Image 1: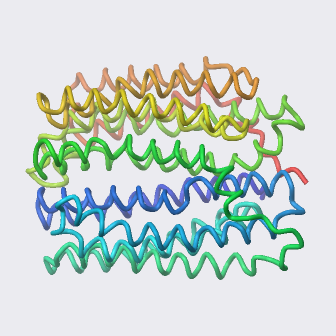
Image 2 (image 1 turned 135 degrees about the vertical axis):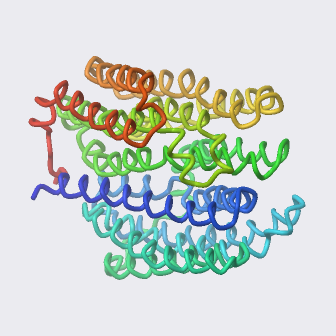
Length: 465
């Protein structure tokens, strides 16, 4: 089987399974612990996501890119990455509980200590992850993460059934991360012979700094709403917003996994074969929308029934979920186009664009959250994503790489999904799981009808030698 096909299928399927497992974990905590406890749990997970990115800081992608362009420097690049991860992991793990104590959130600092163990595990596995990605063995990378979640989920369910405190809930996640790190390192094998030429950790960090800062700003952009809701409202508002966003994450995770499969191919094609580069990116963009559109339609139609799955406390979040479904459509395009900026080496421009979006998002949240709560946060997300996300990122990606894409197939799939969602939502099936499933299936059918030739002729290319 073609390597890209194998990686694409395994990554997308794996990420969807991971999202489903994590959604089940959130469902267990929400139903057994209540909205306020779930709010604290979701808040800490957001902070851990920020800490994990600080550990990575874009260096994994830069290492993959550098090795793809200069394979003879593989050993030196991996050695530099390993050195960087040692001090970054220790710094992030120590900072998480200390910052919570300093900010007056000492009640969850003990749980943050358990989260620090997970952060150290993520730091340890990253050189091995680069090795697997360069070898186009992302299936092993996702397999290790699935094994970790398979350990975490029953531990979390047992802790939730026992009404265990937050530190034990987070400790279950740390146990899964430790298993993931062990398997990733084992499956990647030795990093290779000692490097004949030394690359300093600082030089790698310097090249990755614009991407790292841009990624950090993106995560801050996503974490702003929970942070401000916690500060300006209460844990219940945090819980409602976090619950709504949980249901949009599977599509985004799948699209990110798809980009991970295409990224090494695109990196090698950009300078060597511009025509193949444009064709491959066209496929990646269409597939991203093909993944997002059915989920948009299903979530938009079935929002009321979906939120009731979490318990009666969460029924009020249905309008939030509908708005976040619109954000999902916009994010699909943004996520599919943003790797082109990295491939072209325009991380600085990406950072400035993300900084502008962060500032606009902060202003919108400060204006809307006090008046509308979580609904105001969702409105702000949608407005900023459409303007400074989808449109601006797509324009920058095309101008940076010189590629010109055909947007008609993507626009057709999106328009069909919107029309289907609105029509079924206006029938008695609106607000039901049956209606959501029907909307998703119809969108899949229309997507295939609009893009069957592209899907049939999908360019599944091997990594350039």
